[in-house]
Length: 328
Image (tube, rainbow, N blue to C red; front, side, top):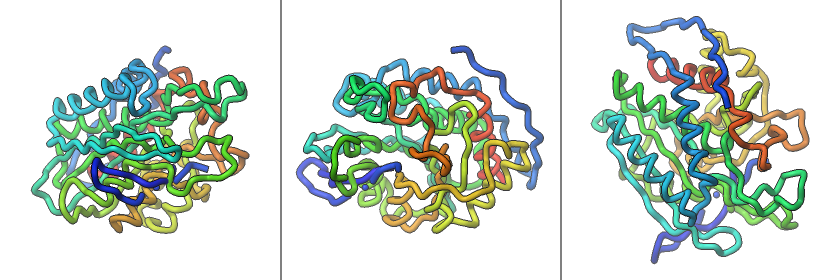
């Protein structure tokens, strides 16, 4: 969730905002088929591995070696899973004037299909643990195991399954960059649109001219233990039918303890810019708790956002629900 202004090499663009080791066993769920299309079984251990692999590179902060190496890994994985891969490279300007070497990574399936679904997540990680209880960490990059890597891990597993059995519609997977480089928490003034720089760039420069999709699903912080996904406010405002479809599907699959049937807080996240910039109704599946001061888990933007908090059970609940929605 975030906000700012972006530059692409010699060209300037206005831009986006802010948001307010052992693998656990997976939970078996009853799959209710609603069409003749067989929904694949989401492998939570596989998704967990993709999360851990990203974290192993180190914090994926733009302009670092870890960021560059992880970007190449994500490109290679999408190609390995049979996607048509598009890479957008851009120089984006952060709130403090830092020029960020950013990269949006896009994998498409059934490129000739007009009916399309957009699945997306951000792959960068926060450059500062500015919410950490220890002030000494307030300018230390975080692992971003949940805030970044979890959504990408789920989508990589979905991409692997799409290669094996692609549904009869077009699917685009986008890993947006520079989502988490928003204004440092210590700053008294919030810089408008300093978050979500990669999605801001993409909505003005889609990988396909006049790109559109029937709907989009954003996965952000979808891997922590005991996560709860309330119905995010902007999603309800712009994509209520799709919110209800996803939450109903989750309940039918037995994941009601994760997908809470109550309104959550509005979150400035990548989906806001996709909604407003490309007029695509989008749903943000995000671990947010309207009953806390932060609105997110205690680990959010702290050094505790690491693999210790990642749960295969949560990854399974999210991944299987998304698969059921797009296959049926």
